Image 1 (cartoon, one colour):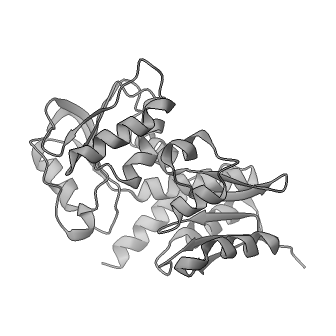
Image 2 (image 1 turned 90 degrees about the horizontal axis):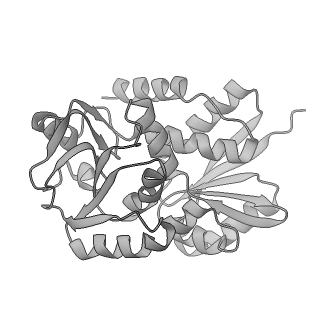
Length: 281
């Protein structure tokens, strides 16, 4: 009888999660016997859910909304630098009897930008939004060599606060620029939409966006069709537009590697997911 490795994703809601499909596809490609489930945790019962999962021999958990900040608190003694800067955890595991936490969202974004031909080294990057989605990606983008990074937000004070809180994690010569959503002056190689606008069928109300000749408009949300932000960015001159499906697969690959010591090929899984999305239009 095959002994299955147990992993899962925890959230509330959770029925929509594509993580089981992604991780089972990775496991099949890598020859692993994996059981990967969705776990719906009651909002007030997340710590007990985590404790029970690992007490029963589980190997790894992915964490999604609304529990990433609570997962950060649970693993506070053993956090990766990325989890510390993000103040949120999306990957949990047990090592030497202790709960460890990492945040793979930012590295997942960076690997997807590289897949699209936009390695951050030397690029001018504008981040729309200063919430949790943006916060987890700022440090990885700077570590990857972004020449300029500006975070703009509808309420600019939130962008200022984010920059201030991330300052201790940055080299002294590195600075995060901040401003309101309308403060978009300059030419940009990459513009990333980390706002929730894509969920409301509207592009964020930014100032004019000036794209470099070879440029990327990247929306962290994904769907079967181009998002309103991707459409408006194309009209504004972005030569390439992409949604966040590749980021989803990229961050999953990093979690998979943490738990199993194997780095899966993301391309086939991404292609399968894209086909499935478009088939359901």
